Length: 183
Image (cartoon, rainbow, N blue to C red):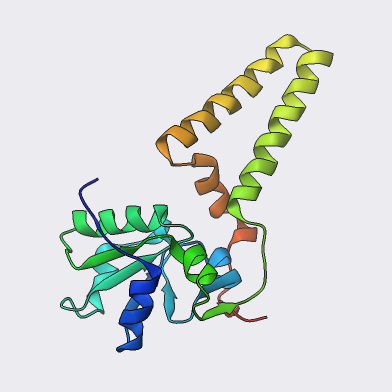
């Protein structure tokens, strides 16, 4: 990744106090519904289309990108920079830092986080394959080893295929008639 511009949540709050800023939240709709900065718009990273996103924005105005902690925001900024946009800034620390600093948020219905879903699925697969390796055939241990390798790879690469797949599951989608932040 090239050197991306970043801003702290304190700097963002100061900029917001001077006038309206353009803030895009690239988390999943479920995460966005749970808690978000008051003035954020949800554009999930997996569906981020730089041309579409920038088509209805003032190109002279800085676009701020936020996620949960800053990692997906950096990926979104890089995607926009790679598409030719230079006036994009990642919010360091993301929504977690914004909320922890006491800045205005909208809280909605809680859901099961993607991180937690990944732990549940991975743990269940390892547990079942371990039991099957003991009771049926030692070859089932290969499944646990593959899962371990996948989790290690996700940690090293900072990208989780299982998390991306789970994000697309129906229970992680909001129906069109649901408000992003309704109760």
